[in-house]
Image 1 (cartoon, rainbow, N blue to C red):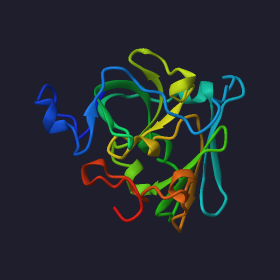
Image 2 (image 1 turned 60 degrees about the vertical axis):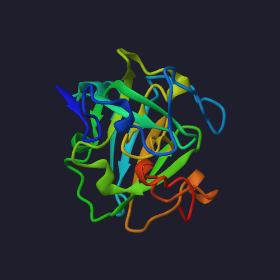
Image 3 (image 1 turned 90 degrees about the vertical axis):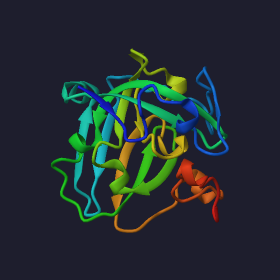
Length: 198
């Protein structure tokens, strides 16, 4: 089933879909804070850990067996490029969090390789986020976060953590990698929330 995010309005004017301060690209730039992790699929695992320590985990085969979505979304990088109508395949966080009992309001996302980023739990719910493993009909390339990355298209793309490994559900908000270095806690591209204080 195809899912279209609220920010995507089909074949409308592209300038209506580009946040302030952004420019359009046709390619897919690769930006990473460190080396590209290589995660064999037979050792790949994705987990959600609640604030009480309860853990739900999926192997690669178990993730593939879950109902998948094919969202078409616009993406916006804090370095000012935007790419429109990107197509992905992955599992909605609504599916992964369906049986998780939590009182958490925040999530600290952990990636293979040690990267982290934080965001409110509500930004992962109601069809707004996926664990994505295909891009443009192909397996997601390691440079773009393969075998799987978080996809949260309504926020700047540093919140869509590459090589996603674990979601840590928390009662408090804990800054991740870029947030500790002065990036904005939330990162709304339409409000140009690039850095702390924006």
